[in-house]
Image 1 (cartoon, rainbow, N blue to C red):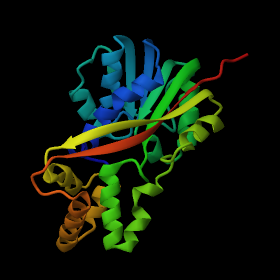
Image 2: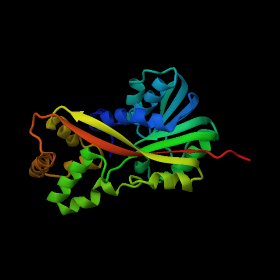
Image 3: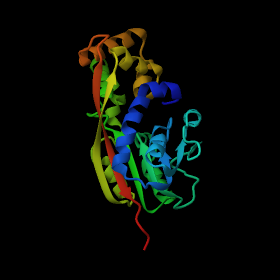
Length: 262
């Protein structure tokens, strides 16, 4: 679904960079120690952690070898940040080996998020913070909402693959997962960011790169279908080709504390 690191950076990387810092403001990770970045992707969150906390060491894991290679090649903190291939559902780290953990825009893509969170709890020390954020695909992520509303208007069958059906993307769902996993002092809040696109082409062309559910849907269309979808999206955004556009987005963020042992 997401395979090409360069294409991902053009499509969603700019959003990852925008959300990383607000997530860290909310997460309150420890200023020193070892931090796990769950589903590090191209490295946005790990780098943001290293920039914010000069005494932290960050381990990023991701199942994509291409993402890990890209993050490693672009890593400006190689003395404190490392990236490796790994599955959040089956971590190889020892119990309580991290002082905190965070995940950016990933948990909804993990096949068994409950199993992954239990693993993250296992490798995080008692008293450590675990935090994550997921897009509000159903209402708050305007870039994707405009796309899917247009797709469904043109083809009712697109409703089945609309990202609004993603798990964990509605208010309270992340908190519920954190609660069911035994975490304590759970808090959830929205993170709101805004993205400027220099033109409609700047917005639209990354959809043609085949990334994520939206990119896969575009790839499934014939040329006429792509043109019709492009025109419908542009109509809904009420923009011409050369106009800048500012699009808001909302993510739901959660944090909780690993219980201390008696």
